[in-house]
Image 1 (spheres, helix red, strand yellow):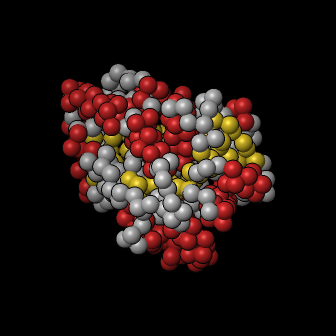
Image 2 (image 1 turned 60 degrees about the horizontal axis):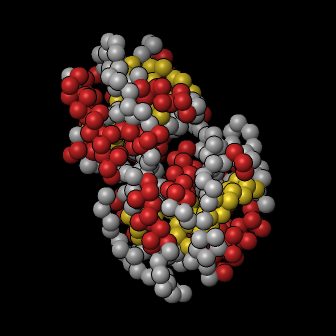
Length: 399
């Protein structure tokens, strides 16, 4: 075994989004380079328990799943204790996806106690506004962070961040001397087919993600309703995790009188079909500042561009440079800025849209290759001659 991998959920688990998908993509990339790994995760999925043979990460990866129950979102299950202790005791190095879940916390504690080198990908858990929200409104979780999360992160080889904003959040809580590896998430563009220009009247936008305040979708809808043309449509796909917020969302859908279609949770192929018939993907995370900015990268942006779909995205993610390579529009977190971006999208002709589509696909192919990016992370993870005290890692690595 070259490394142990820890993640709370792993595809084909349904309902747990970006962290699990990133864990899968990165592990597959490492397996493609011939690295041998053991991966430990919960068996949780909203459509039934996973079995190890269902998790396809490559022949170099041995998958071990423990039974999850109770706090399923956090991957709780007592079977994680022996599985993770064995992994941390036998693996030469451990890569941990996420913070403050049951398996990620156990793995970090075990590695620290056993003096086993490890790296942590925080996956949005320390975004500045999210941390401020926890400090203000969730005192018990803040104590958990102070007593367990922060001390173990300080012992890590490096904290893997995917955007400048996420790196800023890590520096805020760990100090300016925090060891940060800044490398974006990769995406296998060969898994995505570029669809043709959507036919029909009007402009169709799509949103893929949970209907919750952190995603900013209700504020986006309010702006869209002010500037939409009669034939324009907005299709929303994703689960709801907040009753009050979802009620507000339903009222906005009703106000739109059929112009907004809510599809709920979609299977993978249904997501691809929705992208294919949409002109733009929207990602307004953090638009409602009361919810805080939690999105550290936004895998769905990369997937949309891989499918040849331009993007409308909020400023402050990993995509502030998106306009510079011509694959969409970035808006400030104000209603006026959202409206301005929407008007720009509405004014595009077919040729201009197709140029954006091409630019996005090219960017994903050239800049977000998962094997190449994964190797940059692996070189730090397996750095030769590592001493008992972790070595300093370059604090900034451009895309």
